[in-house]
Length: 159
Figure: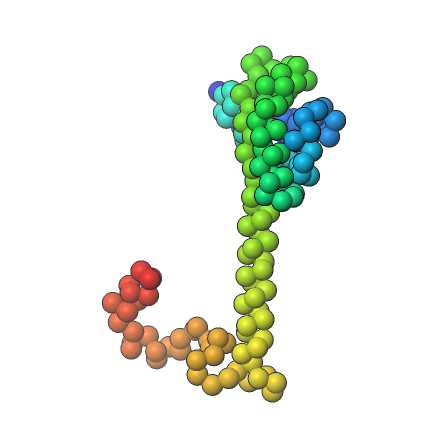
């Protein structure tokens, strides 16, 4: 088993080398269908497996085409990683699409939508609208806790 520091260092070296290959080494036209960047690399503790996460900017078709091109170039990438890094055993390379950027964009859009809804729920004088508005305080005062039953709390958490 390799040390954690060595695993991290090998992962960073693989990320750097594969990023360079995406720019100039892989000749498959499908890989150029979408803008591709390596976001991270996970390497197993025994350095035998490397999962390379790529972010692809483009349409769904371009993303699919790029992933197919990367799958076809896997053996080339593995050979190049082995020769460039000089490892005793070259890790098996698997490409995976990183969708965290898309998820982050969706979360930000939802937060912006909630902010707009809250702004619309406040009247021009700055006072929240009467009962039922989205701006009501979710915080209960100290005396309100005696009115809440345990069953109500369980029901709220279950759905």
